[in-house]
Image 1: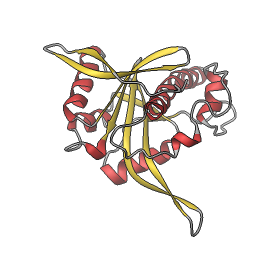
Image 2 (image 1 turned 135 degrees about the horizontal axis):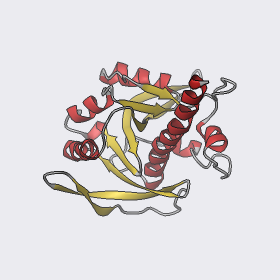
Image 3 (image 1 turned 90 degrees about the vertical axis):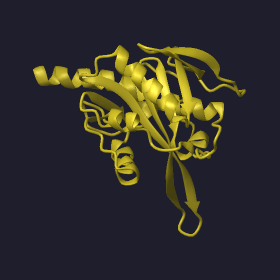
Amino acid sequence: MYPEEEQDPRTITIRRSWTRCYRKAYTVKCLNKIIYTIATSDTDEVDCWIANIRSIYKLKDFFVGLGIQWRAFSNTTNRQTLVGRIATIQICVENSCLIYQLLYGSHFPNSLRNFLEDDGIIFAVSRMNIDQAMLSSRLGIHLTRPFEVSYHPSNGKQYSMEQMARMFLGFVGYPGEIKPVKISRSNWERKKLSMAQVTYATVDAYISLHLGFVLYRIKMMNRSR
């Protein structure tokens, strides 16, 4: 899942109803699927990606995978881990993922803010209490329809993303493959993300999305009984 060597993004065409956006995209493989990921701090690229999604899909009860990353700092005095600024917001729709590096953007795009607060979109997110609190306190963004994907629908217990992927998505990789701790604790504030970081953020949003599909379907089936 994680490449051994760095890779350069390749140019892809993002079609819009009135123009085309040519962007550099990384190719990430997850659960035997290919995801095309744009990692950027350019607000115009964010606007283009979101406009493209809105032009293609009817955003009513529409699922989107969501995650955020930050740089963690260790406090050697009391051995606590301190949470820094939000460094990236990653969102995934089908096989397309956007990683916005907000520390280097000229401003926070209104298109992304409106997208995150759109009441027609259901955001599948793991440990949403953390992500939701950070988005609210640091950016004043309030997710209208978050959907937690870390709880088992039968026993109500909370599990890691990898455990949930094993139970509901058929993941059979080695322990720690989906979200390696070393990458999780890496410097997410760097201007150019490593390929491992791009993969990590993409996998985070992509698996959240697909867990959301499965768990929401189970929830609706249980309601109808």
